[in-house]
Image (cartoon, rainbow, N blue to C red):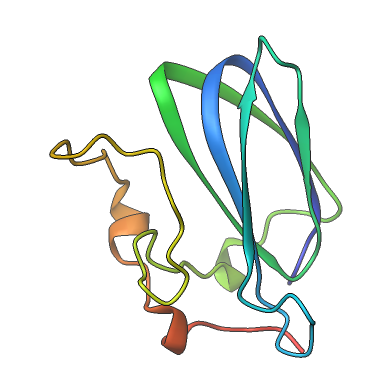
Amino acid sequence: NPQGKLVRVVSGEVFDVAVDLRKNSPTFKQWVGVTLSAQNGQQLWVPPGFGHGFFVTGEHAHFVYACTDYYAPQTEHCIAYDDPELDVKWPIILGKMPLVSEKDRKGKAFNDAVLFE
């Protein structure tokens, strides 16, 4: 159930990542990361067929999503944030482990992930 998302931050700051999971795309496995904050007012469009994740870079963040379809948790999948195949350059401070949700701790390796055509 792929869906597009327009995301923005209304309070705080995040490092937001989108990764192309479309097997037949010329940008397959490539990712983009941007800082979204209430201060910079930037938004990120995450097209259908892309994975999406974020890292809160401060004490808190309030994130707003506008989606192209209803949330369907039964079709949701998760790739490990630190998967070496994708090698996302998260702004994690060396020696300080990020707080990771239970769902995200169960993320699969990219090579085992559900992909799109």
